[in-house]
Length: 155
Length: 110
Image (cartoon, rainbow over all chains, first blue to last red):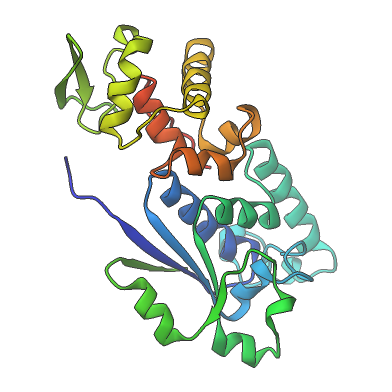
């Protein structure tokens, strides 16, 4: 048997659709492999677990060369919403859940969900601004203690 | 991906061939009386009705569709929630249940 990964900590630092999904897919996939998993949301990544925002995550259409779209076009009113709907539709057809449902499912797999204290303070938020599945708001030091002995992935 | 490296395991009186990550090379040699021993090898003891339901469901899906479901599909169709599935199979419901059900590893990403 080849080497195994037993534990990972995934940091989600971006608040766009394309910034959040990769971390969620990696976390969910890790649990499916039986790997101990913790998710740590920091900066705009907090939007993924923010009650008022997690249903309104948008695809970045400005400054995203991967879309192969003129920058000025990405900034036109409605373009980000339209592209987000298109992406959500495509993901739905592949049975990739919407972000709120996906985060809840990941919590159900037994993964830990944590918010970065510095970011929570920066944005003037509190525990009740977040989804019920959030395990705790922790400092970066506590994050490293929790991540000890495993791999860390930054997204 | 096809793996060529295999290993063997003795389950009861039968010697079976497994892939190097523990899945049956030939799902047709699997029988229900192997389940207790296969489950024990995965750290599952005793095998409860819940385990049996998931294992039989995985087997049925494989026979009907040619592949076992991923955890998300299992959570939507097996009658067990994702939470319950992980309580039954803490080391990964789709993966461990597939090993015990004698079917190939499910390949879904979600």
